[in-house]
Length: 148
Image (cartoon, rainbow, N blue to C red):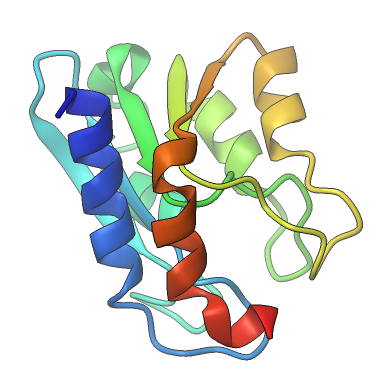
């Protein structure tokens, strides 16, 4: 298994820890440094009722942590590009942190937003976004209660 698949599988595993919600996806995120060290992990609603996985994982690190400039964020779901519950989206937080690469398992379906703009916002800011479709079904399965 490639390291990208390994870390994304860990993000999917974390998503299973999310408290259930009828109004939000269950998402896991892992931030891995250039040397392969886990810098942080998080999952949706881990620390508060509206917390997103990427936001939680980034929030556990010091602001301006230089390791983020060479890190990869692994997220079971595409980072949000629109958000009502906080002033900044996960895509904006990732860009602001200087993370150059994001690996996702599943693109956000049109359920809570008309069209998720996370990937577009990240790529427009120069962030490399890799989608590993082989883990999309595992990420989707964690959210089956939302999808009918």
